[in-house]
Every structure is written in structure tokens, then in C-alpha cells.
Length: 355
Image 1 (cartoon, rainbow, N blue to C red):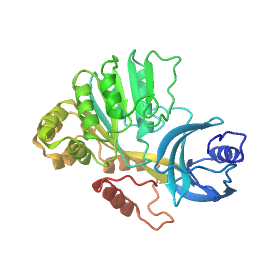
Image 2: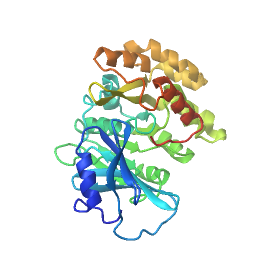
Image 3: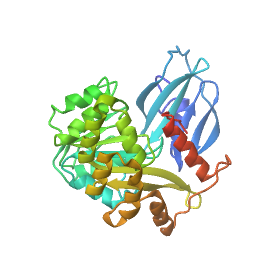
Image 4: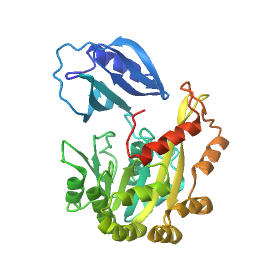
């Protein structure tokens, strides 16, 4: 799709579709009708992408950001049966505020007041992790005079540079830095207050994130997990066996919050909404992590509601009381519980499935 812009046939059609409500992803394959998601459902368009020149195929995948007209897309390019296929995620042009996407007030308060520590935002692919982090970062940046450094692959949201008292340095992996670990290590010499890591993928990044959080920085990062207990275990599995005990003790001291989220669809409103599971740092939580009693973290969620914590069940109850009604069965025939079991399998085998 080199040379794609608003004046090309494909660019014009993408803009037309992007202007519709509930559009999130596009699937583009040469000489086939393009497909897109509306409110999570896959729809096939009549438009067929016809490349104007022969495409030289390079094996493997590539991630990058792209602008077409006024719209920004996160792009993943893959090869399928000898042909390119592109998956484009439509990115909002403005960062929503925390109230608009229902970030729990206790999460907003914890992030705003933190002077150091690790914040983990978790969920499956497409659950809104990047949006939540961007919203939290901007909320803090408007109220503090600090230096934010973000490491993203690719950059999705563009933070405003005017009318905020903070400095935000956005860095794209593959363009500005070679990898997350190297970029994160270098950032410790760049006087940051807040460091955002798009995803913790390996042991080196995990250990440097711990070091940064322990040495006076606020570190916020994502993991592909769906519960607080699984998040702690997944994080520690990234650490080499000979250093797990030390890392577990450090994590118990510097973990400030785990916020897991899911997006559900309300058919009546024609919108998606978020539910959350949130674990905050208290002595009881730190002690459970230090002792390795991770399964008991679920009990902390249930008993910690008065301290601002919440489980998915309590979060769902709150959303239903606000008038939201999740769809339990889609046209695919999968129930809500079946989808949850599928996501659980995704975590256990350590892969990411694009939906």
C-alpha cells in the first residue's frame, strides 16, 4: 500500500468507512473485497483493492503507523499464501478523558498521586489497554510538570504538545529505538518522571522496568493477561529462574496497581463499554505477592471494595446498574462464557490471537 493517501481509490474508501460509527479494524488483501469490523462484527465491503503496481513480497510481519487524510491507523502487514494482507486498526484522533472511557476513579487517583512504582494495564488484544494508558498519562500530564517518555510499537496516540505543563517524548520502536529493553535502559539517563512501555515482552524489559520503578520513576506498561493473579505470575515467569526470588520481593514492594479490562458490546446503545478488575497496593497485597500466594489475590479483590479495588463481577454489576446491557451471544454462536474460556486459553499457551 505504498503511496496510499486520501486521493487514491483505496484511501477514499477507507475514509468513507472510517467516518461510520463503531468502525475499528480493516482487513485488506490485493484483488479481494476489503473487510472491516463494525462494533466487533466482521463485514465484507463491495470495494476490491486493486494495486496500481506489482508488489514485491518480503516474508515476515511488519508493524507501523500510517495517516490517511485526517485518520491514523496502526498497521500490521503479513504474508498469506504468497500475498500481502494488511490489518489496519483505526485510531481515535483525540485521547479521551478518563471519565469518557470509565477508568475507575481509584485508578486515576492512584496514578496521579504516585511518586514511583509499577502500574500494569492488562487485557486481551483489542481490550483498550493503549487507550486507557494514554488517558491516564494525559490526565497526569495536564496536572503535573513532569517529563514523560513513551516507548511504543508503533506510536498510536499523538499527545498534545501545547497547553500542558509537562514534556512528553514519544519514541517508536523500530524507528527511534531498536527494541524495548535497550530503549528503556537508556531512558534512565534521560531524567524521566513517568515511563510508558508499550508491552513487556521479555525478561530484560521486565527487569529494567522493575529497576526503573524501584529507583524513583513511575512506570506504566501492558501485559496480555486477564486477571490480577495471572498478571503477577506472568510477569514473574519472564524473569530468569535464578533471579525470580529477588524480583518477587521487589515486585511486592513497588507494584502500585494492576488494572485488567474487558470490552463488551451493548446492542441497544450500539457501543462498547469496559469492565475492570483492579488490584491496588496495600500491605496485605504486598505480603501475598512476597509469599507467592497468588491465588489469594482474588480474595483481596472481593474484600477490598471499600479501598477502591474491584472484581470483574462487581464492575459488571455497576455497569448494569448504569444501564449497560452486554450481548451474551453473537452471530458466531459463542456465548460470553465460551469467549472467556477462549481468552483464558490464549493466556495459558502464551499467544496473541487477532480478533
